Length: 312
Ligand SMILES: NC(=O)c1ccc[n+]([C@@H]2O[C@H](COP(=O)([O-])OP(=O)(O)OC[C@H]3O[C@@H](n4cnc5c(N)ncnc54)[C@H](O)[C@@H]3O)[C@@H](O)[C@H]2O)c1
Image (cartoon, rainbow, N blue to C red; front, side, top):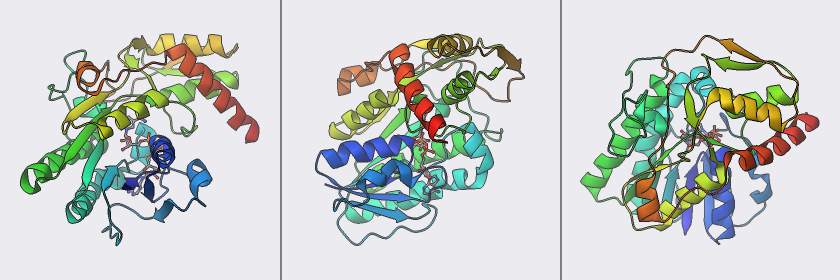
């Protein structure tokens, strides 16, 4: 297939490129390098089945060759990144989704949207299954991301109904692993970098808020399972094992043999108190479930971050 991946030079996108190129597909990456890096895709740059287009998805997208599949992953994805680039984030999820849907419509291509657990906001039910409509502050400090993704889902559903487009939506939950940006404020990288440098580990709030962490290979496996399936629907992909943020910090201190101390800072507004995916639908319909436990995933990530810090 000829596959367009927006955001393909980012963390998750680069693993999709790797898997799909290895499966023999031709890939066009569209990315403005806002938070991604050509470092993540440098191994494919000379591959005849790979094209990189530096382009912002908020601008019209024109591709002459056939397109069979569009994966829309372009968006700042961490609270730090979307706070630094609020308007681009808003537009990547809104205008960018319309532009990529237009591309799929023109080429009669299938379409897969990277949505997020953030569409559930600060959830009033736990775990969250795909039927839950969420609890989101429409004009809060994270709304440029949450609401853009909610709009993106609405756009995908509307194009599917109006133009018979074959579309899928994956709601990705907290994913970590090698190739994450080290300075973008996500909790796993923050803690590991602080621990490896023996700096204080900063927890926002009292650390009792919970998160569920999915290792990137599991998440990507889930996304590819959805892509390859005949399911044109919405799926949660993530790891349902829930951990307190404090427990994560303690685990990382132990795994890195660090002398770091844990310090507590005020919780930012609209920070969700709990996040836990219900993945029953993915297990039953995609025959997928995560395989890598937190300790094993953390060890791989710690090794990678250690090497990155030495390189710096
Ligand atoms: N990693 C996670 O835990 C997670 C969780 C939920 C959802 N997601 C979604 O998965 C997707 C990828 O996330 P990631 O973690 O790989 O983040 P990332 O920041 O590493 O990757 C995003 C990529 O999109 C590109 N991009 C951003 N805005 C763009 C624009 N306007 N035009 C073109 N390219 C643009 C960036 O340069 C980057 O390469 C995002 O849509 C994100 O919302 C990720």
